[in-house]
Length: 297
Image 1 (cartoon, rainbow, N blue to C red):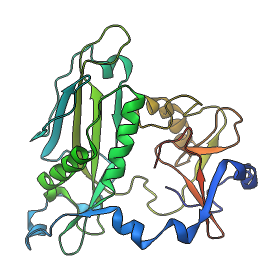
Image 2: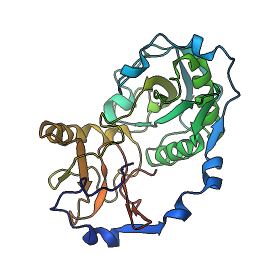
Image 3: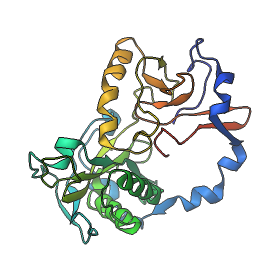
Image 4: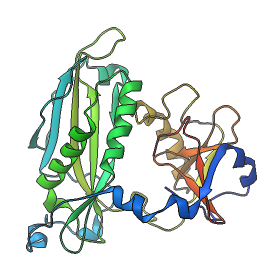
């Protein structure tokens, strides 16, 4: 998420023109202590030697890049069936048919969430049940079975606990978790995959943007669009992201942090950035983009 600052929006963008495309709500109603407490799940505090067990990493040089951890979680099922018991395995490559649904037709979804370490050694997750619900919504759109909410959350917990030595110390970063739901069964003609795999891997990371919490410079792009009405822009399907690599690369070559996309119909309403949502704060009001063509967040 990106908070509005005057330096973020270029002079060519007139904010009032976007007002009709945005929901508004009072800031104090949006952020409440009750909501915050209900969105956190906490593990039991680790032993007093938690920091001695940490991975041998220079936490001050993390960045946002892949550092494979010890374990990943996998769970499988067939079409028209439910996922059953999953298991932890050492992190490594998976076997995939060249005719799998995910490789041939992009039948796949992913999620992203983080685990944080507190000063007392306990580890926090932020609303994993919401990520589970979003994956279920995406799976329905992509004709895929999905883990239940409890299966998803428990898998996340198991993955974190198995890799807890990779959770950075307080203030040094977080353990990023990447749940994947992919069609792994073989297909030739266009059809849903006969088999599916749900997996989670992890990596310790710092902030996604190198600027951290400093203002970002975003390019408003009128040529490229990340979603269209009736498409899949509102779900986290893997096929949504490769098309934004070109405009994102072009923007970075021009010195921008990322691209801020407009709607594909009228080309004047804010949607989102390549890899995250955006909301604007103005005079204690929060402005949210409509959830028609953007990823639910």
